[in-house]
Image 1 (cartoon, rainbow, N blue to C red):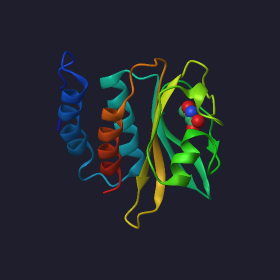
Image 2: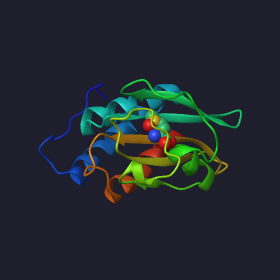
Image 3: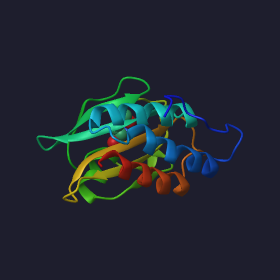
Image 4: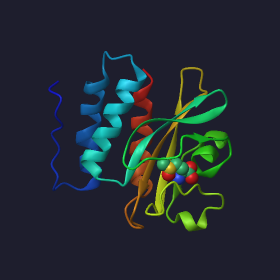
Length: 159
Ligand code: SME
């Protein structure tokens, strides 16, 4: 496909995910390099939804290490069970945090980020290979609809 997204910016969130997901599949199809695919997916999500920060952490030597992302600089290493990312990894589940002030142990990479979603990425052995992290500077943006579609997108990354 042409390296350009076609999304109806006026459509609602769910419709934009429905437009975006096949384009992400086309963009990553036939490309086995994880970094290349994560970089394009982070860029696409940032372009379509305009979130404050969107990116990946990958499990390396029993830590989460910063991977491709879009947004301000972020912390580079996160231990298992620490913050939202470390908890999603340890508990092998997606976590929606509508207000980070109410999440004990939240890692404030940026004080502008007030809500977030972290979705685990599973490899073929069903181990957590990393996480997809989305942060917003608004309280009313991220919800269960995002969790559902971000889980679908996390499934595209490891083919
Ligand atoms: N907020 C995350 C840390 C990563 S950054 O926000 C990019 C957390 O608590 O896991």
